[in-house]
Image (cartoon, rainbow, N blue to C red; front, side):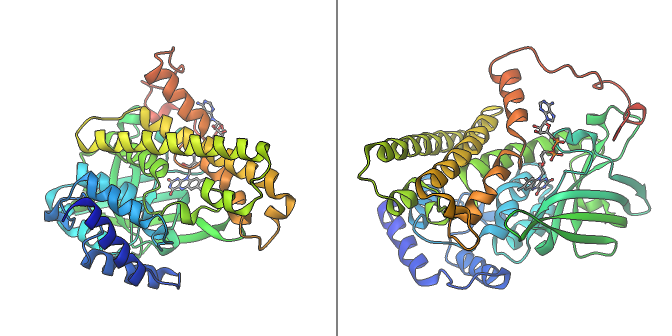
Length: 381
Ligand SMILES: Cc1cc2nc3c(=O)[nH]c(=O)nc-3n(C[C@H](O)[C@H](O)[C@H](O)COP(=O)(O)OP(=O)(O)OC[C@H]3O[C@@H](n4cnc5c(N)ncnc54)[C@H](O)[C@@H]3O)c2cc1C
């Protein structure tokens, strides 16, 4: 089948199978059907439940999906961050145990890195994992954990060695979010709904077979996750495309009077910025699949998306007027959520620090705590 045929087959399948209902159960049923039809995990290896196809098929599917509203939001962390981390760093046994279920929507995943005292400085986290008979005992708190209220599994970053400097005493685990000792409390955001949560771990037992990477080497696993996070956020993995974004060029052009040249001028800027970012993402994604590490350029893509999101939300309000933020207006949620894009996945300031340090070769931030044992640092002070 050539690419044009692949795209039109995908389009026909989506037209017949995209559910009108939303909600987690409908999303899970949809993901199982998507997998049966061969459209889930398009570039993931067939041995782990993927389709073993190329970027070209993935792009063709994304082009077909652009006009549909797919209920894939709850899977975005698993598909965009946790799954790719396991593909890169998991054992064959872990890949076999977790990845197919993730691709079929049988298990929802979340990412448990941030804590009340460790966001930008995530290596300063305090959730402890102590080695016990047959595994590890975890105690601590995480926060801002997206989709955790629905999650079956989480990728959990913990401190296993307080005698080592902060980046060197961390270990990554897969945790059962339904297990004893895990408490999930949803947090409301500006839309009035709960997208993220705070999580408490009280004597949670994790078997050693769920450790991802070596003991005390979790930072390098976390860096893998953060790289995939920035790429997946900027390229919109788990989202179905412009149809879901009411402040996109396509949506705003049809919602406002484009007879005014000043309006057209602003819309053209929105189009150019969106298109440039899409092409940049496409290039990074192709390079990643070809084994070329995008490094700090992933941070540039994430920063560009955050700035574009703010620009398009501001433009929507200026073109449509204050009613765009009124309760119940179709644009209100997108505008209320726009600032979140400048925080989640790393703030704009942190992205600029990374770009300055690793792309522009500017002097790095002073890191006075780099070689100090974690137990000697003042945290939360
Ligand atoms: C919508 C959303 C979803 C999220 N989902 C998840 C999730 O699923 N899992 C997860 O683990 N986390 C998640 N997060 C948390 C996110 O990663 C953190 O909010 C982010 O890393 C910032 O951390 P913080 O909120 O603690 O802010 P802080 O780190 O306290 O930063 C406060 C301010 O100080 C600035 N700042 C801090 N350090 C520096 C510095 N060195 N140089 C310059 N400026 C600096 C920051 O830019 C920011 O403006 C989510 C956040 C949001 C908004």
